[in-house]
Length: 224
Image 1 (cartoon, rainbow, N blue to C red):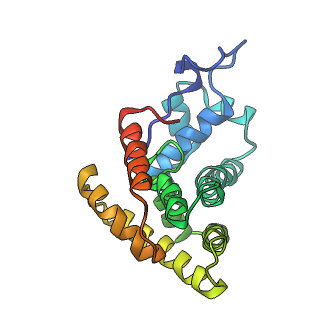
Image 2 (cartoon, helix red, strand yellow):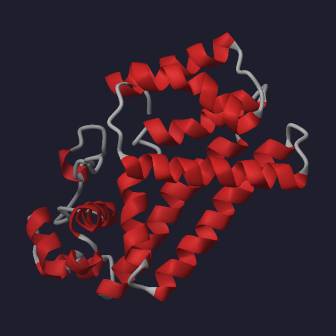
């Protein structure tokens, strides 16, 4: 399920729009993202988007020259959100490798920072476009390199760090694709064992407690 983002005009936390502006460039990107996730790249078209936004088709051209311009911006948006979020989490300061992996797991549990459906939609798009496939592969290389560097910070050898990074990254993709719909408590019981499997290290109790608190805060809407 896509993570719904309100239009700028409907978001009380945003500054009011001025003049004749009814939607922003980001509104167009958010609706394009939603359609990409729900219906696929073939349905990301100007007229259906303008209908959903409640604006004339001509307003599209205030922000984008062509549909292809929008698609390029959409792919760039994916890189600046999902890929950037995962890299930032892998680079975040941590005391131990198990705490570092838990921070990467934030991307799995918090749709505010990483959209799993958006990732899958881009993967599906890449099957239809060589250009998008190239961007996807480059982005995945960037993600894995960040996770590899994370392991190397804790004195894993280069090849072991790369191996563990690939196991962690590709296993999590498969786990996401399985869509197990596990209750939080079921997942939390497995976290210490997952961490040991990924790192070869046992996580401290306070690290598991902190991760549980983060997951619970996501569920109650108390995280950004």
